[in-house]
Length: 240
Image 1 (cartoon, helix red, strand yellow):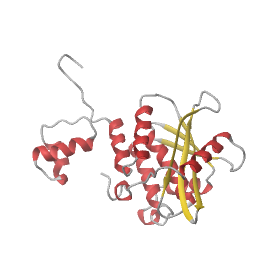
Image 2 (spheres, rainbow, N blue to C red):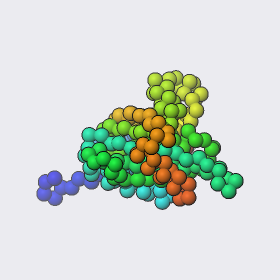
Image 3 (cartoon, one colour):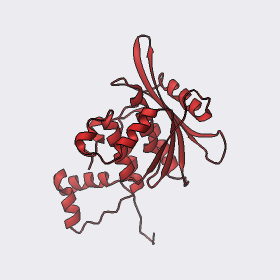
Image 4 (spheres, rainbow, N blue to C red):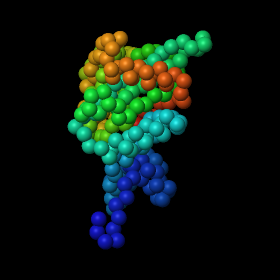
C-alpha cells in the first residue's frame, strides 16, 4: 500500500473476538456493532478458511499438518485440484481402528504425488465414515473458489453425496447416514465456493492413485489421531 500504510489480514472471528474485549460488548451484539458504527472491517476469505480448519478440527499434530498444507496450497494457483482418497477400518489386536488417507496429485505429470496425508480416527466405527472424513480433510486444504476432483472407491460416499446435495429438508437430512459429516462438507463447499466432483474408482482394479491412497489410509492406522469437533462444525446449529 502507500507510504506508512499497512494492510493486515485477519479472520473475521479474530476481529470479532478483539471487538468484544475492546468495546466490552457481548458476542451476540458484535455483528450489529460492526454494521451500525463507523467500524470498517475487511477480512480475507483465505485466512477465514484457515481459521475454519482450526475451528472444525480438534488440536493435534495432524490438524497442524492440515493447516500447513492449506497455507502452502493458497500460494499455488491451479484450475483444478485432484485427490485420491481412502479410508481404512480394521480390527487390530481385538480393537476396531479407523484411519483416513489421501494423496494430492500433479495434474501435469503422470503418477506424481504432490502432497500426502494420513491419520488415525476414533468414534463410532464405520467404513463409510472413514471415507467421508478423508473427503472432508481434502476440502479443508484447498483454497476458496476452487474446483476439485476426488477419486474414491466408495460407492456409498458418492451416492450419499448426490442424495444429500439435493437441498433436502432438515428433517430428511437428519435421516441420512453420517449426517454431521455431510452437513459439514456441504457447508464448506457453499461458504467457500468450492466445486466438488466425486469420481468412482473400481476397488482392487490396480489403479495407481487408489493404491497409493489405500497405502496412506493403512499407514494412518498406526499414526496420531485427527478428529473433528462435532459441536462446532454444523452450519445449521453452531457455525455463524
